[in-house]
Length: 511
Figure 1 (tube, rainbow, N blue to C red):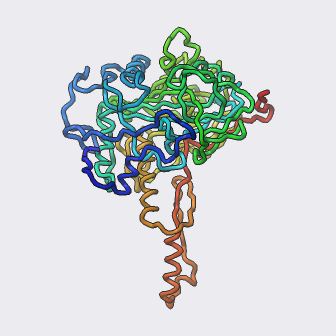
Figure 2: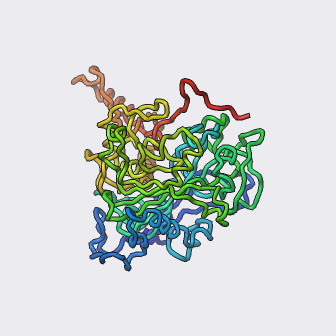
Figure 3: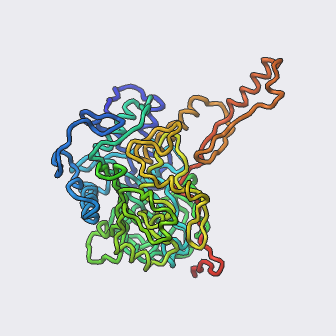
């Protein structure tokens, strides 16, 4: 935030803006707690919130921007492109346990308002609840549903857009389509409850104290070294998010336990602004790979799953069934071999061969999911159903609208929407702010209705309530009823809940 707050009492909105977590730290916890970094820089000179900076950019290779990936052609050298970005994200972060306040190489920041929801930040590492992985999806040995938790980081160019929107936390500025400037880099760490027995590639994965559903073998892993999670009786210790049934993950992070456990690195996502891409962004994801034993630091045992720079809008089901494959995603052959060796139920990393990570929903894709980021959002994935591990859309033509190449800074849907340029955290944070603001302005007791994303809730008066001779008392009564209603969206994750049960096959039991 570029505007400095003078010494005075903070307003309620400012207090929320600076809140790290609304959840209490675990009982008897003596370690550090997580603190948000939101002292965002001002936008760069010539910045326009609806477009790239107006400064003339030099020919390649770029030298002015701290963006080494711009020197590499992502189409010709996707693996090198992804590796350079991973090293950029790790510099100054790996050795400081990803605490941006301690990074002296380059500045990184967190998105605001990610605390204020059922899926909001837990207090130890600032992680938010993500889509769980259903049993059998990732590996044939995965008999448990896996909880996943994540935290994202924005570099200075990316954080400058937050500085523009949240310059005054009391009156955020989002009145037009937003667009991140060139040089923006975002990355996200995803951690999971998977054990070595459930997923063999998780062996010696680095762990953090936060959310888990398994007992932990105590090691020095608390601060970044490797550890092992074992399936021991009782298999589910009481931790931040309870999971009484190992095969059923919680649908949200609303209920938290009162003591800490460990979760382990499964995936690292990244996205960078790159005007050479059809959508103006390039996405990529790494998966933790415990078979890379020759790499000493477990945080570097990462296999690049792939790189995506477009949604392949021409690749509908007919084209795919006819043998066509994505040309705007590159899937690493090593990652594809791992997917097949794991033997899970997912037929590909992303929808019909597009890119998505191991913790993500294969009926979507990295760029597709993030393209819906806008004010007044809709569903993240297309409607349909799973039939023998193949996604069958309800409407193929409608499905392909999720795979348009939405340009950076343009909304996914045009009616009543403003783009937040592929940033789901900017969208979710702003939604959380709006929900809080509505409650703050109407502190009376509410009747809460939940609506599905993208659906309208309409209240119609009965004929007798529209009578022309209606008394003032009746009008006031109806108004009191309307004033007592709040409509909130159910916390949305990336897609529907999937159940993997074939007619001739049942999930194996874990004895």
